[in-house]
Image (cartoon, rainbow, N blue to C red; front, side, top):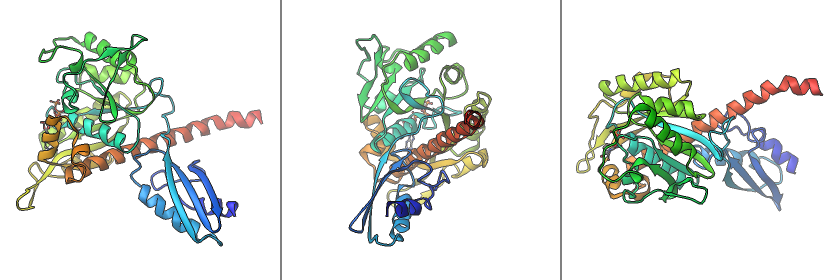
Length: 358
Ligand SMILES: Nc1ncnc2c1ncn2[C@@H]1O[C@H](COP(=O)(O)OP(=O)(O)OP(=O)(O)O)[C@@H](O)[C@H]1O
């Protein structure tokens, strides 16, 4: 019976990875007792965007096995690391960048991090927007101060199920930073390497807007899995977003997708939708970059940020929060695809050596 169930599961493909669940090592348990099959699928991310579809496909495949009348599907998740871990204990470093300031990059970074943590991932958030650090404020921790632990490492602050570090928690409130490139480089290095991040599935980095020293320094300091570009849909923002994409391309950082923020506005009184800045404009950036989602302008996103609770936690049912949750899941899906494909490519590279040994 077990063999028959495994054969049935071999016909189910992960919709994003395009390989079957058995070869991908995603079947953690497959048991049948008195006609009841219990299947536990170990997803490649707890924020899997296609969990529902996988559940349906597993159920219908296993129901075809003679003698099975009920299928119970449960899920676990283990995030697959990049070929080389970014930092000790950190599986993926994901950069959130933008060409221009004010497009909602920090809001997206904070909500992405909170959404991934809400789905069960271990998440860190590094506010590398050293000139305008807003992450601490958006997480309601503007007054908190970073302390050193027993190993004299910076201890990230915990809030809303994630860990974060921001320059705002190091420098006295309200003081501007007047630092030159090399100092910024070393500050970012310290945030990354001298902080006790612990075990993380994703370390989200909120970059300063544009294409400057901090961005370059980060891509050179650690093995980054990929970058997300946040833009608004109007042409002036897209021109700068294209520049940011080009910077990542030159630094060999894969662009995992685009987030179109302030994409449209739904009037709360009439329900009418207005495309204030020309919704869908980010498609002009090119077909090769997945559009991770379109986030509308929403009063809650701004008010929740000012109240220190990310909208995906404070008002998860609103259209904007749902869009942000879906952006986070689509991003997690892209990361899984990249990690699994890299692991496969690596195992293929190793194959000739193994054959020689045999
Ligand atoms: N979808 C949205 N709906 C409503 N308000 C938003 C939305 N996205 C961002 N905002 C608001 O717009 C303002 C700017 O957002 P945010 O600070 O995230 O932008 P940014 O791109 O990180 O800016 P900078 O690069 O200058 O740091 C904030 O007040 C934020 O609350």
